[in-house]
Structures are given as structure tokens and as C-alpha cells.
Amino acid sequence: MKNPESILVSIVICTYNRSKLLDICLRSLQGQTIDKNLFEVLVIDNNSTDDTAEVARLFREVFPHFHLIKEPKQGLSHARNRGWQEAKGEYVAYIDDDAKAHHNWVSEMLRFTRDHPEIEVFGGPYYSYSMEPLPEWFPEEYGTYYLGDIERLVEIPGECLNGTNMAYKKNLLAHYNGFNHDLGMRGTQLGYGEETELLKQMHEDGIAIFYCPNMKVDHLVAQYKISLLWLLRSAYYSGFSWGKMQKTSGLVKGFLRIPYRAIRGTALFFTLGKTPFRRRVYYSYRDFFGSCGLLRAMIDWDPNKTRKPKKA
Image (cartoon, rainbow, N blue to C red; front, side):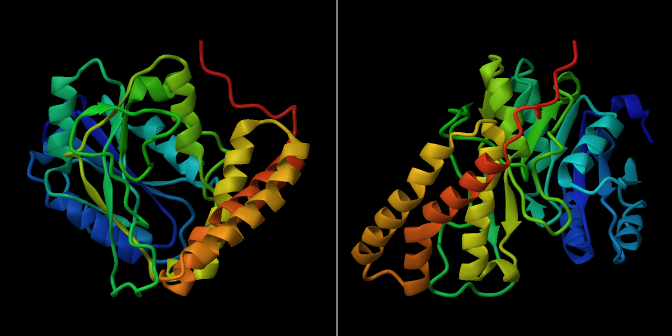
């Protein structure tokens, strides 16, 4: 076994009560076509009550550098921050516990760092997969994020990277104090945006953020997501999380946006006549639900609550 100082990348998997999916994720890392001494695997258990710990321990013999770490503060941002704080690698890569890395995920990651040592933040695409056939009405593009086949800058704010497939230099995460604890999932409570806020701040500070198309993962469309109600609820919390990132009230515009989105959605609904009904409802009213979530965030806005300051 090599000295821990030789570890190039720390792979962080944050998990909460999804041991079966964690097993699939870890098996995909087991199949990486690269020397396993070059990376470490950190499973951050965020208060799981299932057999997550037992599943994780089965992989101790598989990976030369493996750590199971308990994070008692509930929330994905807490778990992600614990990950980079415990990491020994120069780079910290995140993959969701319900994702599967392609066999060359780590090798492509390290190839990118060799070719672009000046780039401190980068990530790749993810492609949806499901345990069961998806119904005809389900949006075909849902669960996939793809920006093409060319390595290039990410054009923020129109584009972004996703937490299921991203990597940072550890010292950069330390400089920004990591992810905002006020954003993101918290147990089973929906929440988004912690990586988006961080990347937006980095972009505003002039840090280049790159897209690496060959660094691929597959991301699960779980059965509970195959529901119109869940999709619209997710749109609501996306809007809510976006509103929390904006840190502004803007209540008048927020209230005016609601009827506008409702009218626009209804008009769109009648132009999508050949689209399956539930998909048509989703396409037509997701922006309306997102605007409702945004308005709620504006109502809840606290001007005294700001993003954690960067370290000096």
C-alpha cells in the first residue's frame, strides 16, 4: 500500500438510508480501470438507520484507501463539507450514492488534471437510468445532463455542473468554506442549489469552471420520482432553493410572476396536444410551481442571513 500522500483524488459519496444504491455505486468504483492506490473512497454516512455501515465495510478489502465516516449534522451540505475536510487527495470528487461511475471515470478525471493542471473546478455529464421501464409519459430528458462532446468552459449562469459528477481542488473548497448549509437536501426533505451557489460565486470571482465530456456517470431515476406530483414538487423546491440563493425579497415581482406563469402554462398546455397528458402537465406548469417556491423563499428571506464568508 502506498503512502496516503500519494493519493491524487478523494472520491466522496454522501449517503442517507440508501444502502442498496450505495452498494451499486461502490461496485462501479470497484470496476475502475486504474490503480486503486491513486484514489481514496470516503463514504459519508449522514445518520443512516439502515445497513449502510455494513454495506460500506464490505468494500474495505476492495479499496486500499477506504474510509467510512459518520456525519451527525443532518444535511447533504454538512456531509459534503465533511468529505472535503477529511480528504487526503489534491482533488475532491463527488458522486451521488444513486449514481454509477463509468469504468474510466477516475482515469478520465486524472487525465484531465494532467492536461489542465491550472483548472481547479470541473465536472462531466450524467445519463439517466432506471431499474424498471419508464412509462411513456415520463419526460425523456429527465435525469440527464449533457453539454456536448467537447472539453470547454461552462457558461454560467446558463449552464452549470451537477453535484453527482464534479471535482474541485481541495484547497479551493477550503478557501470558500465549502457548501452552504442552508441549501441542499436535509434527510428526506427536498432541497437543491448548494453546488450551484458555490459555482456561481467561484465564477463571479473569475475562476474557470470546465466541462469534461468523457468523465461520465449514470444517475438513477428512482421509482418514487416517476410521479407527476413528485416532479412538480421538485420544481417547487428548485424554485425555493433558487430564491434562497438570490438573497433578496422582490415580493412585488414575485407575486406578479405567479399569474403570469399560470397563464403562460395554460397556453402551453393547449399547444402540446399530442404530448402524453402527464408530460404535458409537467412541461406546462413546472415554471408555475417553481415560481411558487421562489415566492416562498422571498417571503422567508432574512437580510441578516448571508453566505458564509470566504477564508482570508
